Image (cartoon, rainbow, N blue to C red; front, side, top):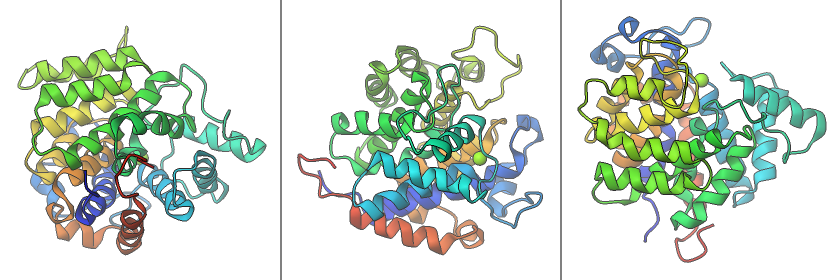
Length: 325
Ligand SMILES: [Mg+2]
């Protein structure tokens, strides 16, 4: 297996940031309140209180993770935790989730990265929102799973959130390296990766391809993993299970285009900056940097800095022999 192309690494990091910035102005809205795909593609919409093209915590935690890796030339969980917590020390996080905030505050108070993650029961998507780019690091599926699980546990101890982080990293790895994506075999690989961490996430990922082209797919996805759904009408809350399923569903429904996949995801409604971030990264891992509209990259905040970091990450990714980082 060869190194991921530079275009794939840039596509993953810039794609995630562009998707995050595309969704940010519409976080929490119902699907029918979100503009058309053409309108989303034309330019970033106004995000109150921030400059045009502003990304949020999803991208900030991803970039902190990748910054740590390029500095350490390895994935050192303690240093990733430190870099993530630094964002809170500097009060610079935009739209943070509660679990990530608790985790960072615990780290800043104790310096202990092993026990900082939010407790079991808090199963938000703060893991999955930041792990796609990690998937490009690994030569083998087996080497990815324990490391991405440990990186996920920095913020969340709940096994559903840990499984979600692993599933998204594995999805990026597969999308960046497999020549064909068959929905059933793709979801089987993600389900297998999660199985020993959380069987519920695993089982739902395995069922997901049965719902492609199904009119009730969004009911299945939005209500997955909940005995009593918070909302009857489908909307993607920050709960990790629907977030991961909706992200994979978007990629499988729109397999040929970065823009179609990301606008589809943002138009699902709910936690759409995170959906934009995850699907933007996954579609970027599949299609590369040239698939992302240049007008959006040009207007993205810190676009050039992200490109420089992505280039450094590409150079740091180990030659993919047996070691796998
Ligand atoms: Mg966000």
